[in-house]
Amino acid sequence: MQYRYIVLINTTIGAFISQLDANIVLISLPTILRELPGTPTFYGIWIIMGYTLVTATVLLTIGRLGDMFGRVKLYNLGFAIFTIGSGLCSIAPNGLFLVLMRFVQGLGAALIWSNNAAILTDVFPATERGRALGINQVAGVSGSILGLVAGGVLTTFLGWRSIFWINLVPGVFATAWAYLKLKDLNPHLKGEKLDPLGNVLFGVGLTSFLVGLTLGALGGWQATDILLMVAGVGMLTVFVYVEMHVENPMMDVRLFRLRAFTAGAIANLLVSISRSSIFLILIFYFQGALLYDAFTAGVLLLPFSVAFVIVGPLSGALSDRFGPRLLASTGLILTAIALFWFSILPYKVPYPILALPMVLTGVGGGMFFAPNVAAIMNAVPPARRGVASGVSSTLFSVGSLVSLGLVFAIFGATVPLSSLQAIFAGLTPPAGSLSVSLFIGAMHQAFLILGVISLIAAIPASQTGKRPKETIIYVATDSP
Image 1 (tube, rainbow, N blue to C red):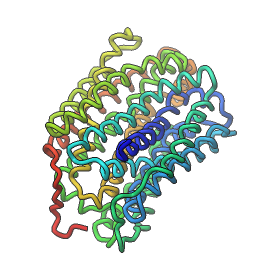
Image 2 (cartoon, rainbow, N blue to C red):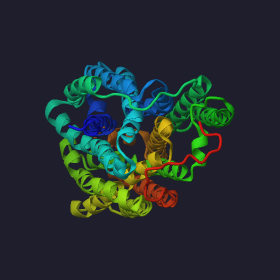
Image 3 (cartoon, one colour):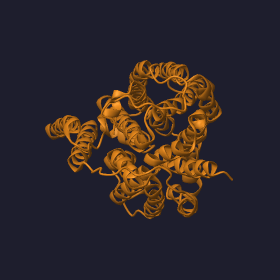
C-alpha cells in the first residue's frame, strides 16, 4: 500500500473517533443527568463544553509544537491520551470526575485533530489534496453525526458508560499502527519558541467568558457572571494585542495576510457557530419535549449523516477540479435555508417534514467542509501547515463553544430554570405544556439566529481560493 494511503486511513480513524466523542455524549446527556450521582445541569453543560474548550485552548500551541518537533510524534501521543481518557470517563463515579476526564479526552483529541490535516497535506499533491482532505473531513463530521446514533443505541441497550468503551479497541490499534508506520516528511522549524503569555490569556479568557455565560444562563445573570464574561473578553482583547507584537506568537497573525486563508478561516468560525448547536437543540426536542428515548432520538437524526456522507466526498473531488468557492458558499446558503425552515416548524410536526431540513443541512455541510479545508491548506506554505491547521481548528472549536453558549443563553432567558432542567434530563416539565411551549419558542428563536449566521458565513466562503495548483507562493514579504 502506498504510504500516503496508510496516512489517509490512519488519520481518518483519528478524525472519526475524535469527533465521534464530541457529539456522542450529546445524545446520552439526558440519561447521564438522571443516572450519574452529583451531576447538576451546570456539570451537564460542561461535560459537553469541557471537551471542546480544552481542544480550542491548546490547538494552536500543538500546531506550533508539531511544526517544531514533528507532527507525527504529537499525533501518536494524542491517540494514547485520548484512549486513556476514554477509559477513565467510563468509570466516572460522579459528574465532576466525568467533566475532568472529558478534559483529558479533549487534550488527546486536540493532539490528533490539530495535526491530521497537516500530515495529510504533507503527503498528497495539491491536485489530489481536496479529495484526501474531503475523506478525512467527512470522517470527522460523520463521526460527530453518527455519534448521535451510536450513542442512542449504546445508551439504551448497554447504558451510558458504554459510549466510552467503543473508543478503546480502535484507539489502541490506531496508536500502535501510527507509531509503527507514520513518519514526518517535512523538516522541523528551527529557532521557534512558544508563547506562554498568549496561551494563558487565550485559555483563561475563553474559559472565564464561557463559565460566566453558562452560569448566567442557568442562574439569572448575577453580577459575578457578568464580571466573568467581561474579564474574559478583556483577556481575549489583550491576547490579540500580544499576538500582534510578540516575537513568536501563539497565533501567527501573518497568515491572515493571505486572502484565501483569512476567508476560509472566518467562514470556518461562522459555520461552527451556526451548526454546532443544531444537534443539541433537536436532541432536547426529541428527548425533552417529545419524551423519546435515546435510541429513538438517535435514529431520528440519521438524515443528517446520510446526506452528509453522500455529498462530502463528492464535494472534495469537485473542489480539486473547479475550486472551492461555489461549492462552499452554496452549501452555506442551503444550510441557512434549512435553519430558517427549522425556525417555523410547529411542535409535534410530522417527522417526514422535519426530516427534510435535516437532509438539506447535511447536504449543505457536505458541500462546505472539504472544499473549505482544502482552500485553507492550499493557501499556506508547507512549513506553516501545522500552524494553519491549528488556527483553523481553533476557530472552529471557539465557534462551537460560542454556539453552545449562545443557545443555552437563549433557552435560559426564555424557559424557567426548573422546566429547563427537566427538559434537559428528559423528564416531564413541572409546569406542563406551557413550559414545552416556551421551549419551542426558544428553539425557533435559536434556529433563526443560527440561520442568519450561516447566511453571513457564505460571504467569506465565496472569497476562498481558486482551483489549486502545485506551486504555492507565500505573499508576505517577512514570511517565516
